[in-house]
Image 1 (tube, helix red, strand yellow):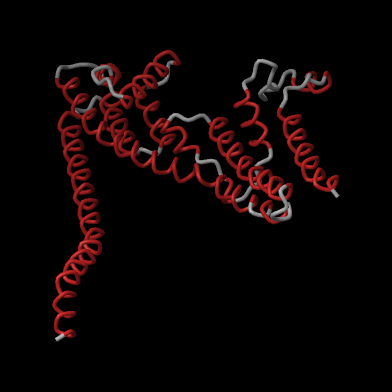
Image 2 (image 1 turned 90 degrees about the vertical axis):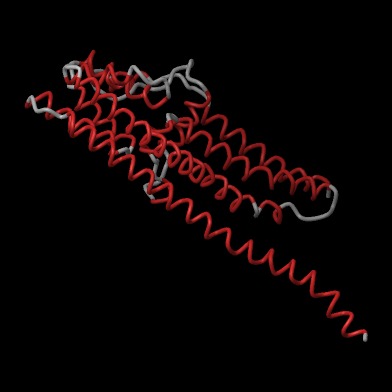
Length: 292
C-alpha cells in the first residue's frame, strides 16, 4: 500500500519537470531563424535571457483572449513595471497556489489523515486568486501614481509658463521646465523630451503620445497649449497659468471629496463604539434594578 502514496508525488514531480522544460532556453531552429530574416519580428530569446523574461514571454504567448487576462499596459507604463515582470509574478504566484495544496495533501496522505486529492482541489481556486491578486495591487499603485503625476503637472504648467514669459522657445521651455524638478514625474517627462529631441520629433507630440501611454490627460493639455505657441506663435502664458490654476482647483476638490468619503465611512464605527459605551454604562444599572 505504501507504493500508492508515491503516485501523487511522481505525478507532481513530472508536472514540475514539464513546466521547467518549457521555461528553459532552447537551441534556435535553423528553419525558424531563416524565416525571421528580413522581417521585423522580435528574435527568439537567447541563452542570456533572464528567468523572469523567459517566464513572462512564455505566459504572454499563451494568454487567452479573455477579459480577465487583458494586460493593463497603461498602468504598467505609468508605474514603470515591464510586462514580462508583471506576467512572471502572476504566473509564479499562481503556480505557488496550485502546487502548495498538492504538497500539503501529499504530507497528509503520508501520515494517513486525508487523501491526496482533497487538499489538492483547493489549488485551483487558490491559483486563480493569486493570479488576479497583482492586478488589484497594480491598480492601487497606478491610481496613487496618476494622482501624484497630476499634481506634478500642475507645477509643470507654472514652470513652462515662467519659461515662456522669459522668452524661451516653445520646445526649449518644455525641456527647461522639466529639468527643474527632481521627482520621478519630472524625470519621466525629461526622458521623453530628450528622446524626442534625439529623434527629431516635436516635443508636444512626444508629450501627447506619452500622456496617452500612461493615461494622464493633464499632460496632453500642456502639449496642446504649447503647440499653439510653437506652430502658430500664439501667446500662451495666460492660458498656461489658467490651466494650472484650474488643475489645482480640481485636485483640491478631489481631496475634499475623498476626505468626506473617509469621514462618512468613519460614522458607522464611531456609532457602534458609542453604543458599546452606552451598553457598558447601562448594564450595571439594569442588573441592579433586576436584582432589587
